[in-house]
Image (cartoon, rainbow, N blue to C red; front, side, top):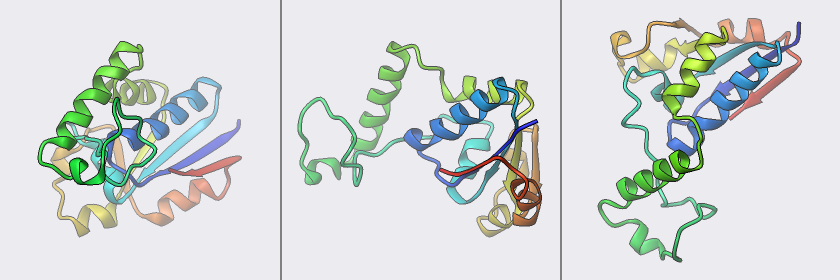
Length: 154
């Protein structure tokens, strides 16, 4: 059986999709898949994903309906507006929500590992996270990743 390991380090809306899409696709193709969530990627394991946002600031590749100067991108409310616009676009195009993709991964037996060091560093409460995860350190991830066909850092 082929194996794929993914390291998820980002907790923004635009960076939440790649690990879930890649993991669910690989699992559907019969891969044994593990995703190691560390630093800001831990946000993707929270029970409530409504706080996952996207920012137009420092994201020059983000397509905007009109050209937007950096000064405008810094204004209060722009992050919320960009997040709402992106979620609306995803929904209109029939792209699954983060909650749906995460559930699909879990249903396909993708193993989620939350970085224990990061949990301790940021003093997260384990009860804020979904139940279907394992807590472990880099060694836990490396034990699996060291024997994979594909290892990705996203």
